[in-house]
Image (cartoon, rainbow over all chains, first blue to last red; front, side):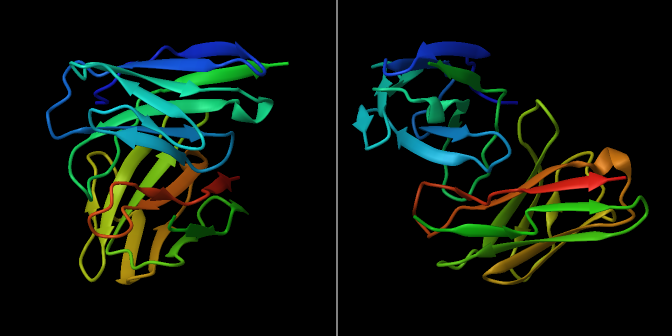
Length: 110
Length: 116
């Protein structure tokens, strides 16, 4: 079973920030938090990952709480092309498969 | 980042026939390849893990004689759906951990199989 829980769906207005929450209350000390997204009928696309510090890249920011029991993915200026299912996954070791939960279906509205 | 390709991107076949799906790592050597399937409106489910030069390991409930996996080289893993039936219609996705020590996992674009 997936170790994370996410809201099933969210809406966001185009141009606004999209904040996607994820709970991972049973995360272990050596487990990373990963975010992937899947646009309809495509393979999952890597967004960002982190261990305990906040991370930022050209796509998004990842905010991890100090106790590491939850995190938030932030898309700073959502566009229509960001409409997708967003998956929050925790995983420890290199080489292990990812266990996908149902994710959050983000709809960016014009 | 590393690139994983799949071929074909979609396939339609008749019930009872076999279909082979190829997964290639284009710019790295993939010692491990994961195969997932995804039914409509559902999440990805791991089917099996293939390791180069050894037998694949299958998840519970996945028939190893029906879903044949071959990982004969460091850049190619294949999934063959034997005697396909309409209930095998799904989106099949492969992925690889990529370079040793890296944290990302690289996914192929997926193959949509429709069995008539």
